[in-house]
Image (cartoon, rainbow, N blue to C red; front, top):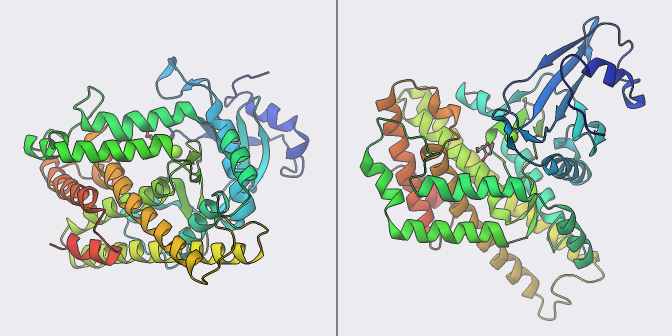
Length: 409
Ligand code: SR1
Ligand code: MG
Protein backbone atom coordinates (compact mmCIF):
# COMPACT_ATOMS: atom_id res chain seq x y z
CA UNK A 1 0.00 0.00 0.00
CA UNK A 2 1.16 3.53 -0.76
CA UNK A 3 2.62 5.62 2.03
CA UNK A 4 4.68 8.77 1.82
CA UNK A 5 8.37 8.62 2.53
CA UNK A 6 10.07 11.42 4.40
CA UNK A 7 13.38 12.20 6.07
CA UNK A 8 12.18 10.36 9.22
CA UNK A 9 10.94 7.02 7.83
CA UNK A 10 13.26 6.66 4.82
CA UNK A 11 16.17 4.97 6.59
CA UNK A 12 14.04 2.23 8.16
CA UNK A 13 12.32 1.71 4.80
CA UNK A 14 15.70 1.28 3.08
CA UNK A 15 16.91 -1.06 5.80
CA UNK A 16 13.85 -3.27 5.18
CA UNK A 17 14.66 -3.76 1.48
CA UNK A 18 16.74 -6.81 0.46
CA UNK A 19 17.92 -4.75 -2.59
CA UNK A 20 19.64 -2.24 -0.28
CA UNK A 21 21.70 -4.74 1.71
CA UNK A 22 24.55 -4.74 -0.79
CA UNK A 23 24.65 -0.92 -1.02
CA UNK A 24 25.16 -0.12 2.67
CA UNK A 25 27.60 -1.88 4.95
CA UNK A 26 25.50 -0.61 7.89
CA UNK A 27 22.20 1.26 8.37
CA UNK A 28 23.25 2.67 11.77
CA UNK A 29 24.51 6.06 10.66
CA UNK A 30 22.72 7.06 7.45
CA UNK A 31 22.18 10.74 6.64
CA UNK A 32 19.18 11.90 4.60
CA UNK A 33 19.35 15.09 2.50
CA UNK A 34 16.20 16.29 0.78
CA UNK A 35 16.72 17.67 -2.74
CA UNK A 36 14.32 20.59 -2.95
CA UNK A 37 14.88 21.50 -6.64
CA UNK A 38 12.06 19.50 -8.28
CA UNK A 39 8.48 20.79 -8.43
CA UNK A 40 6.53 17.56 -8.82
CA UNK A 41 8.18 14.88 -6.66
CA UNK A 42 10.07 14.26 -3.43
CA UNK A 43 13.75 13.44 -3.82
CA UNK A 44 16.39 12.46 -1.27
CA UNK A 45 20.02 11.42 -1.19
CA UNK A 46 20.79 8.90 1.55
CA UNK A 47 24.45 8.39 2.46
CA UNK A 48 26.37 6.39 5.00
CA UNK A 49 28.01 9.13 7.09
CA UNK A 50 30.78 6.69 8.04
CA UNK A 51 31.47 5.91 4.37
CA UNK A 52 30.00 8.57 2.02
CA UNK A 53 30.83 6.42 -1.02
CA UNK A 54 27.81 4.36 0.00
CA UNK A 55 24.83 6.41 -1.12
CA UNK A 56 21.60 6.17 -3.11
CA UNK A 57 19.15 8.60 -4.71
CA UNK A 58 15.44 8.11 -3.88
CA UNK A 59 12.56 9.72 -5.76
CA UNK A 60 8.89 9.35 -4.87
CA UNK A 61 5.81 10.78 -6.60
CA UNK A 62 3.07 11.89 -4.20
CA UNK A 63 -0.57 11.94 -5.40
CA UNK A 64 -0.34 15.71 -5.80
CA UNK A 65 2.07 18.35 -7.15
CA UNK A 66 4.72 18.60 -4.44
CA UNK A 67 5.33 22.34 -4.54
CA UNK A 68 1.61 23.21 -4.66
CA UNK A 69 0.48 20.82 -1.95
CA UNK A 70 -2.39 18.36 -1.47
CA UNK A 71 -4.99 20.72 -2.89
CA UNK A 72 -3.37 20.15 -6.33
CA UNK A 73 -3.99 16.43 -6.92
CA UNK A 74 -2.07 14.63 -9.65
CA UNK A 75 -2.14 10.90 -10.29
CA UNK A 76 1.02 8.89 -9.57
CA UNK A 77 0.98 7.58 -13.18
CA UNK A 78 4.08 9.74 -13.80
CA UNK A 79 6.27 7.41 -11.75
CA UNK A 80 5.05 4.36 -13.69
CA UNK A 81 5.89 6.25 -16.90
CA UNK A 82 9.33 7.19 -15.56
CA UNK A 83 10.12 3.61 -14.49
CA UNK A 84 9.07 2.35 -17.93
CA UNK A 85 11.12 4.98 -19.79
CA UNK A 86 14.21 4.55 -17.63
CA UNK A 87 14.10 0.77 -18.02
CA UNK A 88 13.87 1.18 -21.79
CA UNK A 89 16.74 3.71 -21.75
CA UNK A 90 18.86 1.25 -19.74
CA UNK A 91 18.29 -1.35 -22.47
CA UNK A 92 19.07 0.75 -25.56
CA UNK A 93 21.36 3.50 -24.19
CA UNK A 94 22.88 1.96 -21.04
CA UNK A 95 25.72 4.46 -20.65
CA UNK A 96 23.22 7.33 -20.16
CA UNK A 97 20.93 5.59 -17.66
CA UNK A 98 21.52 5.79 -13.89
CA UNK A 99 21.39 2.29 -12.41
CA UNK A 100 18.03 1.28 -10.96
CA UNK A 101 18.47 -0.38 -7.53
CA UNK A 102 14.80 -0.66 -6.62
CA UNK A 103 11.48 0.28 -8.15
CA UNK A 104 7.89 0.06 -6.98
CA UNK A 105 4.82 1.19 -8.86
CA UNK A 106 2.72 0.66 -5.71
CA UNK A 107 4.85 3.11 -3.74
CA UNK A 108 5.65 5.21 -6.86
CA UNK A 109 9.29 5.11 -5.88
CA UNK A 110 12.58 4.73 -7.68
CA UNK A 111 15.88 4.16 -5.90
CA UNK A 112 18.80 4.93 -8.18
CA UNK A 113 22.53 5.18 -8.29
CA UNK A 114 23.51 8.54 -6.75
CA UNK A 115 25.40 10.37 -9.49
CA UNK A 116 28.27 11.69 -7.38
CA UNK A 117 30.80 13.63 -9.44
CA UNK A 118 28.22 14.67 -12.06
CA UNK A 119 26.56 18.08 -12.33
CA UNK A 120 23.38 19.40 -13.87
CA UNK A 121 24.17 20.51 -17.42
CA UNK A 122 22.19 23.79 -17.11
CA UNK A 123 24.34 24.87 -14.13
CA UNK A 124 27.48 24.03 -16.09
CA UNK A 125 26.26 26.01 -19.11
CA UNK A 126 25.58 29.03 -16.90
CA UNK A 127 29.16 28.80 -15.64
CA UNK A 128 30.42 28.66 -19.24
CA UNK A 129 32.00 25.20 -18.96
CA UNK A 130 32.87 23.24 -22.10
CA UNK A 131 32.10 19.53 -22.61
CA UNK A 132 33.85 17.92 -25.55
CA UNK A 133 31.66 14.80 -25.52
CA UNK A 134 28.23 16.27 -24.83
CA UNK A 135 26.96 16.40 -28.44
CA UNK A 136 28.14 12.90 -29.27
CA UNK A 137 26.70 11.40 -26.08
CA UNK A 138 23.33 13.11 -26.46
CA UNK A 139 23.11 12.38 -30.20
CA UNK A 140 23.67 8.69 -29.38
CA UNK A 141 21.08 8.79 -26.60
CA UNK A 142 18.48 10.44 -28.84
CA UNK A 143 19.13 8.12 -31.79
CA UNK A 144 19.00 4.95 -29.67
CA UNK A 145 15.95 5.76 -27.55
CA UNK A 146 13.96 7.26 -30.43
CA UNK A 147 14.90 4.74 -33.13
CA UNK A 148 14.41 1.57 -31.09
CA UNK A 149 11.04 2.74 -29.76
CA UNK A 150 9.83 3.77 -33.24
CA UNK A 151 7.99 1.71 -35.87
CA UNK A 152 11.30 1.21 -37.67
CA UNK A 153 13.28 -0.43 -34.87
CA UNK A 154 10.80 -3.11 -33.73
CA UNK A 155 7.78 -5.02 -34.96
CA UNK A 156 4.41 -3.30 -35.28
CA UNK A 157 3.07 -5.50 -32.46
CA UNK A 158 5.93 -4.48 -30.14
CA UNK A 159 5.37 -0.82 -31.00
CA UNK A 160 1.67 -1.11 -30.20
CA UNK A 161 2.45 -2.73 -26.85
CA UNK A 162 4.89 0.07 -26.06
CA UNK A 163 2.29 2.75 -26.85
CA UNK A 164 -0.29 0.96 -24.71
CA UNK A 165 2.16 0.95 -21.76
CA UNK A 166 3.31 4.56 -22.09
CA UNK A 167 0.13 6.45 -21.30
CA UNK A 168 0.99 9.52 -19.20
CA UNK A 169 -2.05 11.68 -19.82
CA UNK A 170 -1.86 13.94 -16.75
CA UNK A 171 1.72 14.96 -17.52
CA UNK A 172 0.89 15.40 -21.22
CA UNK A 173 -1.92 17.73 -20.19
CA UNK A 174 0.57 19.84 -18.19
CA UNK A 175 2.70 20.10 -21.34
CA UNK A 176 -0.32 20.88 -23.54
CA UNK A 177 -1.34 23.74 -21.22
CA UNK A 178 2.02 25.14 -20.16
CA UNK A 179 3.92 24.74 -23.44
CA UNK A 180 1.37 25.08 -26.22
CA UNK A 181 -1.58 27.04 -24.78
CA UNK A 182 -1.09 29.44 -21.85
CA UNK A 183 2.03 31.25 -23.13
CA UNK A 184 0.16 32.11 -26.34
CA UNK A 185 -3.16 33.28 -24.92
CA UNK A 186 -2.29 35.81 -22.23
CA UNK A 187 -3.31 33.38 -19.46
CA UNK A 188 -3.39 34.29 -15.77
CA UNK A 189 -0.72 31.62 -15.16
CA UNK A 190 1.76 33.46 -17.41
CA UNK A 191 4.58 35.40 -15.85
CA UNK A 192 6.00 38.29 -17.87
CA UNK A 193 9.15 40.19 -17.07
CA UNK A 194 7.74 43.67 -16.25
CA UNK A 195 10.41 45.21 -18.49
CA UNK A 196 9.38 43.13 -21.52
CA UNK A 197 7.56 45.43 -23.97
CA UNK A 198 3.94 44.81 -24.92
CA UNK A 199 5.15 44.78 -28.53
CA UNK A 200 7.40 41.77 -27.83
CA UNK A 201 4.52 39.89 -26.21
CA UNK A 202 2.07 40.83 -28.96
CA UNK A 203 4.39 39.74 -31.77
CA UNK A 204 3.77 36.21 -30.46
CA UNK A 205 0.29 36.27 -28.94
CA UNK A 206 -1.41 38.54 -31.47
CA UNK A 207 0.09 37.19 -34.68
CA UNK A 208 -2.45 34.89 -36.31
CA UNK A 209 0.24 33.03 -38.29
CA UNK A 210 2.15 32.25 -35.07
CA UNK A 211 -1.03 31.14 -33.31
CA UNK A 212 -2.05 28.89 -36.20
CA UNK A 213 1.38 27.27 -36.46
CA UNK A 214 1.66 26.73 -32.70
CA UNK A 215 -1.70 24.97 -32.95
CA UNK A 216 -0.15 22.73 -35.65
CA UNK A 217 2.66 21.85 -33.24
CA UNK A 218 0.20 21.19 -30.40
CA UNK A 219 -1.86 18.95 -32.67
CA UNK A 220 1.26 16.99 -33.54
CA UNK A 221 2.07 16.71 -29.84
CA UNK A 222 -1.39 15.37 -28.98
CA UNK A 223 -1.79 12.97 -31.93
CA UNK A 224 1.61 11.70 -33.11
CA UNK A 225 2.96 8.52 -31.54
CA UNK A 226 6.27 8.10 -33.36
CA UNK A 227 8.43 6.93 -30.45
CA UNK A 228 8.79 6.76 -26.67
CA UNK A 229 10.01 10.21 -25.63
CA UNK A 230 11.72 11.49 -22.52
CA UNK A 231 9.13 14.26 -22.66
CA UNK A 232 11.02 17.03 -20.82
CA UNK A 233 14.53 16.95 -22.25
CA UNK A 234 15.82 20.34 -21.14
CA UNK A 235 19.36 20.92 -19.88
CA UNK A 236 18.23 20.38 -16.28
CA UNK A 237 17.42 16.76 -17.20
CA UNK A 238 21.05 16.02 -18.05
CA UNK A 239 23.88 15.32 -15.59
CA UNK A 240 27.41 15.09 -16.86
CA UNK A 241 31.13 15.42 -16.38
CA UNK A 242 33.92 15.35 -18.98
CA UNK A 243 33.70 11.58 -19.38
CA UNK A 244 30.07 10.67 -19.17
CA UNK A 245 26.54 12.00 -19.71
CA UNK A 246 23.38 10.83 -17.93
CA UNK A 247 19.76 11.59 -18.77
CA UNK A 248 17.47 11.79 -15.75
CA UNK A 249 13.90 12.69 -14.76
CA UNK A 250 11.73 11.01 -17.39
CA UNK A 251 8.50 11.67 -15.50
CA UNK A 252 6.94 13.31 -18.61
CA UNK A 253 7.71 10.25 -20.80
CA UNK A 254 5.04 9.34 -23.37
CA UNK A 255 4.69 8.11 -26.95
CA UNK A 256 4.93 11.24 -29.09
CA UNK A 257 6.63 13.02 -31.99
CA UNK A 258 10.40 12.52 -32.21
CA UNK A 259 11.06 16.22 -32.85
CA UNK A 260 9.64 17.10 -29.43
CA UNK A 261 12.63 15.57 -27.60
CA UNK A 262 15.24 16.84 -30.05
CA UNK A 263 13.57 20.28 -30.14
CA UNK A 264 13.51 20.55 -26.34
CA UNK A 265 17.27 20.11 -26.11
CA UNK A 266 17.95 22.41 -29.06
CA UNK A 267 15.67 25.10 -27.51
CA UNK A 268 17.59 25.03 -24.25
CA UNK A 269 20.94 25.28 -26.04
CA UNK A 270 19.64 28.36 -27.88
CA UNK A 271 18.36 29.86 -24.61
CA UNK A 272 21.84 29.39 -23.21
CA UNK A 273 23.25 30.95 -26.40
CA UNK A 274 21.16 34.13 -25.94
CA UNK A 275 22.16 34.35 -22.27
CA UNK A 276 25.87 34.27 -23.20
CA UNK A 277 25.92 36.30 -26.39
CA UNK A 278 24.10 39.12 -24.59
CA UNK A 279 26.97 39.51 -22.12
CA UNK A 280 29.22 40.87 -24.85
CA UNK A 281 32.62 39.77 -23.50
CA UNK A 282 35.21 37.97 -25.63
CA UNK A 283 34.77 34.78 -23.58
CA UNK A 284 30.96 34.86 -23.77
CA UNK A 285 31.25 35.42 -27.53
CA UNK A 286 33.50 32.37 -27.82
CA UNK A 287 31.22 30.30 -25.60
CA UNK A 288 28.11 31.25 -27.55
CA UNK A 289 29.78 30.10 -30.76
CA UNK A 290 30.58 26.79 -29.06
CA UNK A 291 26.90 26.45 -28.20
CA UNK A 292 25.89 26.93 -31.84
CA UNK A 293 28.42 24.27 -32.85
CA UNK A 294 26.85 21.91 -30.29
CA UNK A 295 23.44 22.29 -31.94
CA UNK A 296 24.91 21.43 -35.35
CA UNK A 297 26.90 18.48 -33.98
CA UNK A 298 23.88 17.22 -32.02
CA UNK A 299 21.62 17.15 -35.06
CA UNK A 300 24.31 15.71 -37.39
CA UNK A 301 25.17 12.98 -34.89
CA UNK A 302 21.51 12.17 -34.27
CA UNK A 303 20.68 12.00 -38.00
CA UNK A 304 23.73 9.85 -38.75
CA UNK A 305 23.17 7.38 -35.91
CA UNK A 306 19.42 7.13 -36.42
CA UNK A 307 20.03 6.34 -40.13
CA UNK A 308 22.78 3.86 -39.22
CA UNK A 309 20.52 1.96 -36.80
CA UNK A 310 17.79 1.95 -39.41
CA UNK A 311 20.02 0.55 -42.21
CA UNK A 312 21.39 -2.15 -39.88
CA UNK A 313 17.91 -3.11 -38.69
CA UNK A 314 16.51 -3.33 -42.22
CA UNK A 315 19.35 -5.58 -43.30
CA UNK A 316 18.43 -8.27 -40.76
CA UNK A 317 14.73 -7.67 -40.04
CA UNK A 318 12.20 -10.32 -41.13
CA UNK A 319 9.78 -7.56 -42.02
CA UNK A 320 11.39 -4.14 -42.54
CA UNK A 321 8.85 -1.32 -42.37
CA UNK A 322 8.86 -0.76 -46.16
CA UNK A 323 9.12 -4.37 -47.20
CA UNK A 324 11.74 -5.37 -49.79
CA UNK A 325 13.64 -2.61 -51.58
CA UNK A 326 13.22 -3.50 -55.27
CA UNK A 327 14.88 -0.37 -56.65
CA UNK A 328 17.91 -0.29 -54.36
CA UNK A 329 17.27 3.28 -53.25
CA UNK A 330 13.63 3.40 -52.04
CA UNK A 331 14.53 2.66 -48.40
CA UNK A 332 17.12 5.44 -48.48
CA UNK A 333 14.61 7.89 -50.01
CA UNK A 334 12.05 7.19 -47.30
CA UNK A 335 14.65 7.60 -44.55
CA UNK A 336 15.62 10.98 -45.95
CA UNK A 337 11.99 12.12 -46.20
CA UNK A 338 11.26 10.93 -42.67
CA UNK A 339 14.27 12.71 -41.16
CA UNK A 340 13.44 15.91 -43.06
CA UNK A 341 10.03 15.80 -41.36
CA UNK A 342 11.68 15.25 -37.96
CA UNK A 343 13.96 18.23 -38.67
CA UNK A 344 10.97 20.50 -39.42
CA UNK A 345 9.20 19.31 -36.27
CA UNK A 346 12.37 19.86 -34.25
CA UNK A 347 12.46 23.52 -35.32
CA UNK A 348 8.76 23.99 -34.56
CA UNK A 349 8.94 22.38 -31.12
CA UNK A 350 12.16 24.24 -30.28
CA UNK A 351 10.36 27.50 -31.06
CA UNK A 352 7.42 26.65 -28.77
CA UNK A 353 9.81 25.62 -26.00
CA UNK A 354 11.79 28.86 -26.21
CA UNK A 355 8.62 30.96 -26.11
CA UNK A 356 7.09 29.09 -23.15
CA UNK A 357 10.22 29.69 -21.04
CA UNK A 358 9.86 33.44 -21.61
CA UNK A 359 6.12 34.14 -21.58
CA UNK A 360 5.00 31.17 -19.48
CA UNK A 361 5.38 30.49 -15.78
CA UNK A 362 8.26 27.98 -15.83
CA UNK A 363 11.39 30.10 -16.32
CA UNK A 364 14.98 29.02 -16.87
CA UNK A 365 17.92 30.05 -14.71
CA UNK A 366 19.97 30.87 -17.83
CA UNK A 367 17.88 34.06 -18.10
CA UNK A 368 16.67 34.47 -14.50
CA UNK A 369 20.27 34.75 -13.24
CA UNK A 370 20.16 38.34 -14.55
CA UNK A 371 18.46 40.51 -11.94
CA UNK A 372 18.48 43.55 -14.22
CA UNK A 373 15.00 43.23 -15.79
CA UNK A 374 15.77 45.61 -18.65
CA UNK A 375 18.82 43.59 -19.64
CA UNK A 376 16.81 40.38 -19.37
CA UNK A 377 14.03 41.86 -21.52
CA UNK A 378 16.58 42.56 -24.25
CA UNK A 379 17.64 38.88 -24.28
CA UNK A 380 14.04 37.73 -24.11
CA UNK A 381 13.05 39.85 -27.11
CA UNK A 382 15.98 38.48 -29.12
CA UNK A 383 15.01 34.90 -28.21
CA UNK A 384 11.30 35.48 -28.99
CA UNK A 385 12.15 37.02 -32.38
CA UNK A 386 14.41 34.06 -33.16
CA UNK A 387 11.79 31.53 -32.05
CA UNK A 388 9.15 33.17 -34.25
CA UNK A 389 11.51 33.01 -37.23
CA UNK A 390 12.15 29.28 -36.58
CA UNK A 391 8.47 28.47 -36.25
CA UNK A 392 7.33 30.35 -39.35
CA UNK A 393 10.21 29.25 -41.59
CA UNK A 394 10.59 25.66 -40.49
CA UNK A 395 9.28 24.40 -43.82
CA UNK A 396 12.04 26.07 -45.85
CA UNK A 397 15.07 25.96 -43.50
CA UNK A 398 17.38 23.14 -44.58
CA UNK A 399 19.95 22.81 -41.82
CA UNK A 400 21.16 24.12 -38.46
CA UNK A 401 24.03 25.77 -40.36
CA UNK A 402 21.36 27.98 -41.96
CA UNK A 403 19.65 28.56 -38.60
CA UNK A 404 22.95 29.57 -37.04
CA UNK A 405 23.73 31.93 -39.90
CA UNK A 406 20.33 33.57 -39.36
CA UNK A 407 20.92 33.92 -35.61
CA UNK A 408 23.88 36.23 -36.27
CA UNK A 409 21.72 38.76 -38.16
C1 SR1 B 1 3.99 24.03 -14.42
S1 SR1 B 1 5.01 23.66 -15.70
C2 SR1 B 1 6.34 22.85 -15.03
C3 SR1 B 1 7.32 22.50 -16.06
O1 SR1 B 1 8.44 21.98 -15.40
C4 SR1 B 1 8.88 20.81 -16.06
O2 SR1 B 1 10.24 20.79 -16.19
C5 SR1 B 1 8.15 20.77 -17.37
O3 SR1 B 1 8.88 21.41 -18.39
C6 SR1 B 1 6.89 21.45 -17.05
O4 SR1 B 1 6.24 21.95 -18.19
MG1 MG C 1 12.01 17.36 -14.42
